[in-house]
Length: 289
Image (cartoon, rainbow, N blue to C red):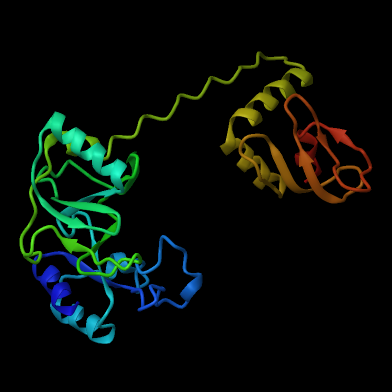
């Protein structure tokens, strides 16, 4: 394991150690038999592994000197100049084969996993392209990019099968660049602009109190930031984003700190087991401060 870990680091991959499975295929972590199925023998030994993963061969040798059977984790992304397409299971592999038949096949570094294949790709030369972790781009197909990691051969899978390269050679040079169709599928897309807020109704001069309260209700119902600021000013807090709901405000009538609901079109209410049944506009809560 140490030789393979150092070979990965020598090739420029940022390496970090993983927990391994024992002879009974149980995880060596402190959870033991309670370790969740998907994490067993796959999760990092180091907290902050994103920052700890390294190409420093002395550090890698020290880690595997301490944990000789540790699995090999490779931090994917711009730092290692690789990203990985994870096809888990027959359906995922069939999807990949079908896409390659239509779009064209580019051969690259591949690895057998417990249930499928990892296809390793060189990080795009275009600095404007970003690839992040993504799940479910097709059934059983995930992406590991910036912020992610994959397991490198010959780490033992929890099934008892070792990860293995599809060629006999160890990882020593960068894989191929992915075809344009695949890069376009997995690249991080620009986020859509936030929806424009609906304009709030304006009030003419000389509006009645009822008109003012109606506009206030609409504003509170539709503006989460306004609800937060009102909650802070009133000395409580809104605890639901979908509907105005204020917590820990004193009742103007009985003084009990309780829950206040401001229902759509309705009043604030004194809401506890021995409530005095006071009800009134939310503005009274602010006046009570």
